[in-house]
Image 1 (cartoon, rainbow, N blue to C red):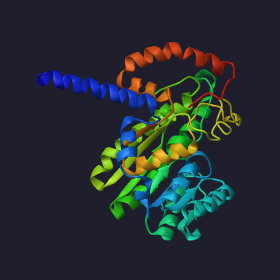
Image 2 (cartoon, rainbow, N blue to C red):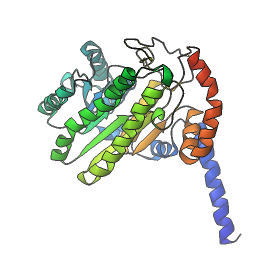
Image 3 (cartoon, helix red, strand yellow):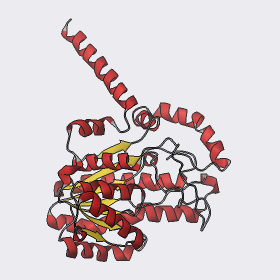
Image 4 (cartoon, rainbow, N blue to C red):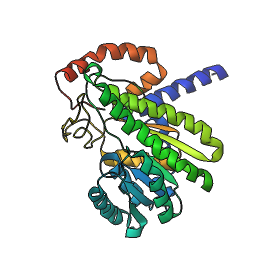
Length: 325
């Protein structure tokens, strides 16, 4: 075979292998590589990691993952009693002392308290190595059925809350000469889906703001990792906004649903943090394949989305709110 033929064969083989890996995987190809050949979360041993939204869901799972890796933790959420339970489990999981974990109640909407919260962490641990902006709240309702006040509340909590805590931590990262922001976005931050208008817009906003920060802070040794999960088991639908004021969705996820486990999601996030990846996609199929299609063939993806998405539109209109994402 001549050189050109060899190149073509190698290219075809690479595409085939990538397609097979993608079809069998539950995360993007880059993260699959790092999971197999890169650093594990154990490389983070001794790091001071602050996790918001640590009382349940992905935040709770990540707390256990990082505790097992030997990290020292700051656990934040609104409910202190739940955080104390997570702390106890972390001490067992990671064989940590009680003073290795600081429970710090935090309201993301109380923006004026965030600087004081940073001071509390610094006084306790002397530094912050990693901030995980995980706290947030989901939402389910058609765009036309969602009041503007709900749009505003979702953006203030999911977007401005994370931005506020980040801005409070940034000066400390600059002073110590390093830092790592990890942000729980969503596949809904990469594409849109019926019934997720407010939620998706808040995640798109996170993607845009932190993409800017990543470039601005690069020369200051400050990193940004965006984590985009798909469907993951959690209590997020119980507390999700709807389209109306003072109403929660109140839907409980069932074990038989096609979702990723919290443990698996947390493990993959730990790998992403350890390898300092800029952005990762963590999702079951066919969600993972669709986000690849949307990223690299957006015209085709949007054409399919408008047509195949009508089934989901009808489901949302009929009140079937336990949909994925």
